Amino acid sequence: MVRLQLLRAGEAVPAQRSREVLRAYELAKTSAEVVEAACSSRVRVLVAADVVAGSDQPNAASDRLLACGIESNDHEFIKQILPMVKDINQPNVSMHGERPVCSAVGQMDPIVFGTLLKAKPDVVTPCGDGKTVREQLAERATRPHAEPSFRKAAADMLQLLEGQDDGR
Image (cartoon, rainbow, N blue to C red; front, side, top):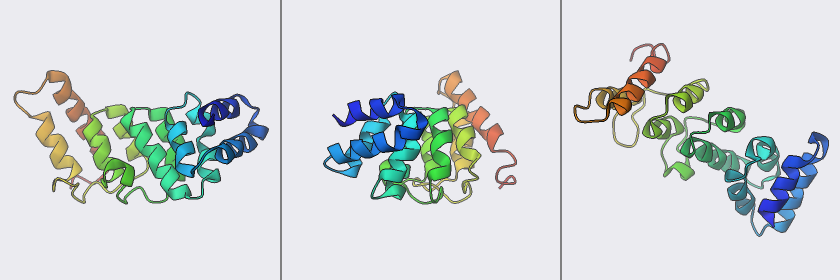
């Protein structure tokens, strides 16, 4: 029922969308149920702001939706969610406690990585594996037995990183 209600919200005129999303919260047992339904919804870009605003834990909701966007390599959705994320440099529970920029490195999608870089994340602090974003990408770009497309994605991401962290 919650998923169906979110579809209705996405189809509603913008002025009524918020009310329709609030109805989804009324149908759900928890706020997290609505956020999870939004993650897989085909109208998630349309309802994301209202899902976050209607949640009893808006910071957790925006963090979870950002994780969904990164996991699905959906740069349009990430662009929609980024302004709602309170602190892009905090560990994200939905990313197993990793920071979003580190999770984006793991996805190896230059478009998603570039979209996330627009939020000016800290790329100097080491990720969970003890390596900085630059170190991870440099290792992947030169990994001898990796697929050429994997190495190219890492090299492209390194290029996007240039200027972001002043070469550190």
